[in-house]
Image 1 (cartoon, helix red, strand yellow):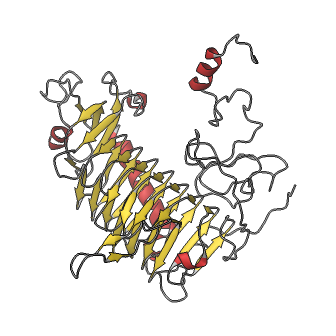
Image 2: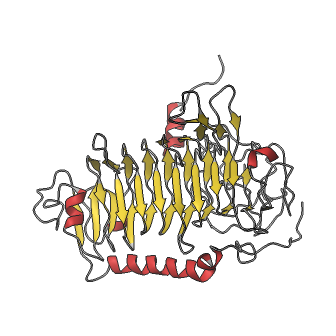
Length: 459
């Protein structure tokens, strides 16, 4: 057991010193957070209008659930900056365009009064925007500012979300079966608590998230997101980022994505653009990853595929780190997999042994399997428990608090943070009652207990 405190880098010390750094400093982040917070407060105070949308509404004026508009697009058309659109659960077969200053919220039962916003449940009242057969993007924003999308399932669009030169915050959305999942060009985007899965990009670029832009003031921040099971041709099965729009990825799970070779048209058959970056592909940009788990991503479709997490191409400025990786788990890589000799600043992470850094370890992270309640979470005995540096988020990828100290393991005390996207709850927390080992005692555990009540074990 160790009780001494180690010298730790602050977020300021580890910030990228690139052409994008000036626009991503702590002050800029604080301003963005306050702008979003103040906007939310204004939306739920006097003067803000609530517009309701429900499939069974009359479509009259959106003022009550009974007179709700029948489509989200109608609600947006009748909204103004500062309004909030409440959408009752259901399948809405439409594509929508966001509007500046308007928040769109799914997950309502269709009974909530104006002071009952907190009662909405996007899991119990699934709210789906479905663009199948339209040939359109499910959600689109061009030159939009201060827009919010919260609590939706987005399916079957040419893109799940398309953001062009816009300032948009996306919360608690599931983006699946699109191509690609989220496409961003320029602007400032925050993606929090989202699942991006089963998206396919056959045109090149990211399967899950496809980001590009040349303006240094553009930014992308992802927090507590899961990006898995996406497919791309040529570049970035999970995440693709090029240009000056360098992403900050915090407490995210990026796993089981695949990048395939891309056929080259013209010049005869049999020519392909080589697949690169099963998990994350970075070109001429800098990525900051904190408390992420990036494993089991693959590339290639001729013969055996290779597991590979990152690929860098023409990235960064001379002498500038290509990637700043802290408190993360990055497995399945060799030095040759990383492309054009990136400059890596890696600390307190489980990382391949060819990269040195303060607090780094290598080897088997001991993670749960794919088909478990918490895929790729830390198992008992994992070397990643209580061995990371201070997290920038106080919650892990599924909402558990950080840190959760396991006495006698790694560093004890208030700085006992874990590497990776999950915080290990420890066998001492509800181990008997947490029957399905999900990290919490809930209804599923109760149902398992009831099912076996008074049964006799053995033959």
